[in-house]
Image 1 (spheres, rainbow, N blue to C red):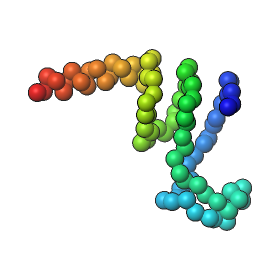
Image 2 (image 1 turned 45 degrees about the vertical axis):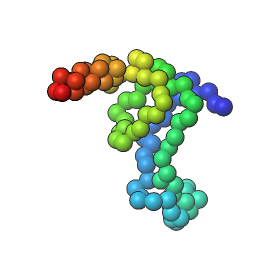
Image 3 (image 1 turned 90 degrees about the vertical axis):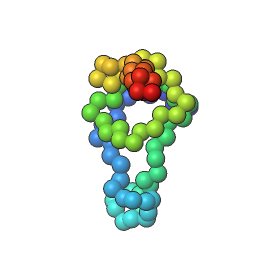
Image 4 (image 1 turned 180 degrees about the vertical axis):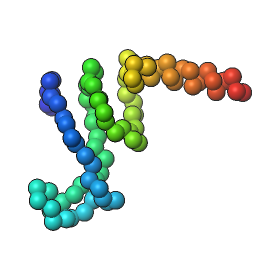
Length: 89
């Protein structure tokens, strides 16, 4: 377990590699791991993701109450999508 209140993560990037590999690069211990980063059983409520690349992020079994993108609630977007799909039928 870890508590990270007030923690700021900046300038974090994914390795530019197709698969995990051994590589001679200072600070990597000769290892580049490109496996997905996972957060499990985490409480990230009130977290702010600012100017982040969330391409292909997959939320599974997550509580999204109050989750928004640029002030638009995700729940509203999903409800609108469902209503649009139902009207198309």
